[in-house]
Length: 230
Ligand code: C5P
Image (cartoon, rainbow, N blue to C red):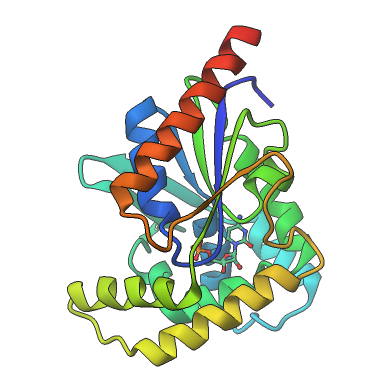
């Protein structure tokens, strides 16, 4: 692992990690790792080959063999799997749901571990996920853990989908979020929980600007200490 500073942002589905991570990456000039996309890519491959409920060996092999490229351009990051642009396809709720299932398989997590660590390159990385601070980058100098009431997360997700012109039913989104939280928090490997040295930010009644300001202050100080100590 390089000594490049890593900012870990962990937390449950729909808590605003993606928006915060993009703001942090732009503020610090760091690259961004959306670790959930790797689980979503594995899930998409599994769905397409009817293997979501397959053996650990089969799912681990799918994860290990992901042929993926992250293409960063002015419009954002495009995700290309086996030569196909799947940026939109992996965001579907069915893929998220399958991702939460395949991510509970230890062989899948093991297969994706080094791939995630390889993103930590100078000048630094903002890593978005569930186990960035606990498992993938335990030595990271800055760790945040975002929380928010499930109902508030469901409300934000519903608005986001409606704004994108998609169908969204609050009650269904709310129950999906609760089910995914329960699965992510109760799995045996890398369960969703804050690292001992993470700063927990409850975003329920904060605006995104307030969350970004708090996060920049915390991370700026921690990263500065890390760079001085190097
Ligand atoms: O963050 P996102 O919703 O894209 O993640 C999809 C699923 O992938 C999550 O519900 C979770 O089960 C899994 N995941 C994980 N560890 C990560 C990131 C995501 O288990 N670091």
